[in-house]
Length: 265
Image (tube, rainbow, N blue to C red; front, side, top):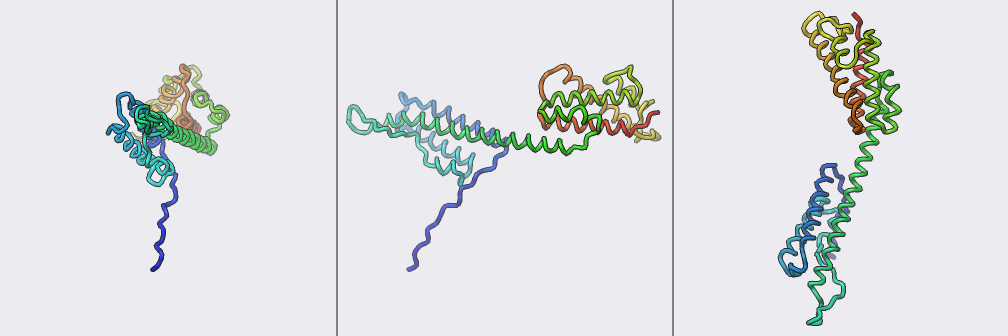
């Protein structure tokens, strides 16, 4: 008779989390911690169904978050709120099961807190990876020289708000120079210079409604760059994320390129 082959468990799988999965997992583990802390051994017996329910929910939560073949689930798939410390019942002389249950509560909380810490580290690593990718993308941008000259060093040094602010100021100054309207500023400058009715700087020949629509749309983009990007950062100290700053600077660079191509009428 041929010997029976031993079945080996599949190799452990390290789950690759998204940011949302990490946040959801942390919330669930913290709820489990609250539920375990609510098991007061002065009111709940070691053989109470409440303890068994809590253990099952903990095991299910770890399975749901980390997966069936994860090291975390394999380590805790049989977890019990129980810690045998060698305590003996003073009356009967036997093991003090209620004390084992009571001692298991802080041990379980520590275990769950350790899983929260694991997810916290994964969140930090994921955030670091995202920032690295975004900063690499910034290096690859073909920025207009007037924009890149004022914001590139600020962005690389992590001063994202200042990078967006200085880029938007550079765009405003470029419009003033190209239009020769140094007497105007801000949204009024953009409405005057790029007006679809009598523009100082035109993006096309303005021969039909399509041309006029493009001119008006570009006017609103330049006006928005002042109202939504320059002005708030000139009056507030809240910072931008690297992702948001990258996209804003790319937009400002595009607008500067359109100014470069515009015709003065």
